[in-house]
Length: 154
Image 1 (spheres, helix red, strand yellow):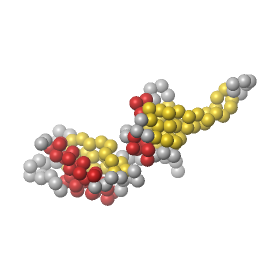
Image 2 (cartoon, rainbow, N blue to C red):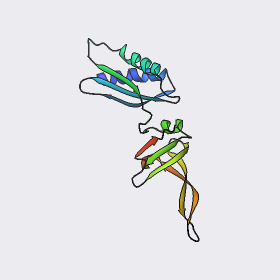
Image 3 (cartoon, rainbow, N blue to C red):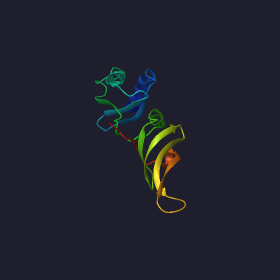
Image 4 (cartoon, rainbow, N blue to C red):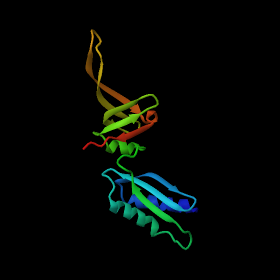
């Protein structure tokens, strides 16, 4: 079993004990720096990061293989990468970039295949001059999304 496989197994075991947490990113550099990025259905606390870190670190022997370990939460402004992140953010406003456009809209629904965005827009009237406010709605498959970030409002 390689070092990466051993760490991945320990990480998986650590996350099984905390079903509200899920893995965003996991990597090991050539210098054995282990980097783990987590997210959670209810956010990620410092204690969550400590617990996952301990689940990995306490089961590895530094005498066998020297390493450094960093366990962090996905930042509030980090792009979303997993359907579970979209599902936990239903009701929030997103900035979504696709290959040909950028949309700022409310995330009203999400599942394992696509998200639903809704927003209002000013468009030319069908008849006559001027503009009218229209309600827009789009179902967007994940493969069409280049980047999506939650817009933080204060």
